[in-house]
Every structure is written in structure tokens, then in C-alpha cells.
Length: 71
Image 1 (cartoon, helix red, strand yellow):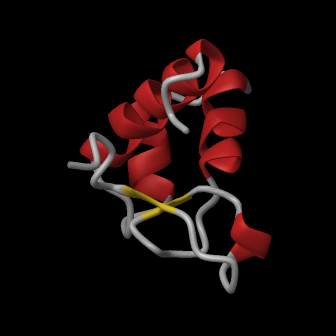
Image 2: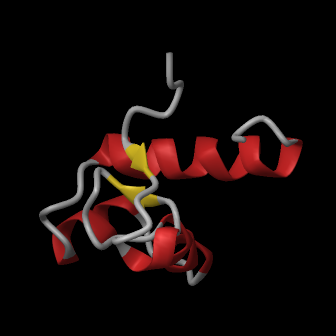
């Protein structure tokens, strides 16, 4: 079972970088928005194709990647 149901990796989308639900939304771009100080609400308002759960999953994926658990 894939613990990251919202994170997809496809070599034909965004050069194989982890993305949100197969969209052209790399996890790293979503993390950059958060790091820039944008709130969840601001991100969701600016990008209605995203869902709050996508943001949580991106954070969880980043944490797991740093721990070596996402591979």
C-alpha cells in the first residue's frame, strides 16, 4: 500500500519529480509556496485545483523523504 495516495511519480510529468495527484504540481513548488509564507488558505484560493489534503500530503512526503521513508 502506498502511504502517499496523493503523491505520484511519472517520468512523463515534470521530469519524474513527485507531483500532486498526477497534475503538473511538483511537491517542491507547493513547499516553496509554504516556505514563502503563504497560508493554506492563500494557496487554495490562488490555486482552486488543489485541496487542503494535497498540502498536508506534500508536507508528510517531504518529511518522509528526509527520513528515507518515501523510497
